[in-house]
Image (cartoon, rainbow, N blue to C red; front, side, top):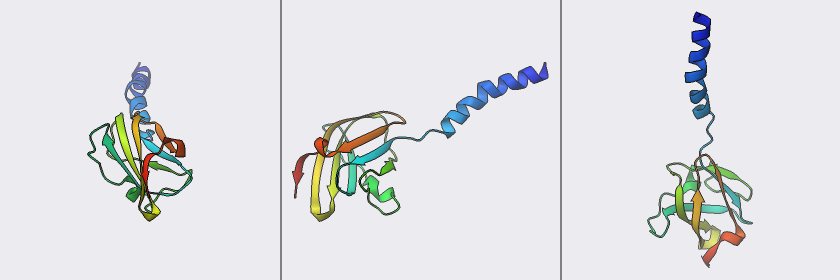
Length: 115
C-alpha cells in the first residue's frame, strides 16, 4: 500500500516539475543572411521597445542559423526591431510568439529597412 502511494505521489507531483525543468522557453532563430547585432520586441503597434536581446548572447550578437533564448518575453503578438552592423535596421511586424516555441526571422520577413 505504501509503495502504491509513493508511486502515485511521484506521478502526480514529480512529472509536472520535470516538465517545467525541461522547458526551453521562447527562442529566436536567426534565419536572415546576416549577423544580428540587435533584436528588440514591442507589443504589436505600440513602438514600446524592450531591451536588446542579443546582449544576452555570449558574443553579444546572433549569427546566421544561431538560436537565442529570449528573456522576459511572454507569449503574444509583437513587432520586432532588428539591427545589423553599419546602422542597418529593419522591422518585423506581427510576430506571433508562443510559449516554449521557436520564433524565426528570415530575410523575407524584414520590412522598412534603413541603411
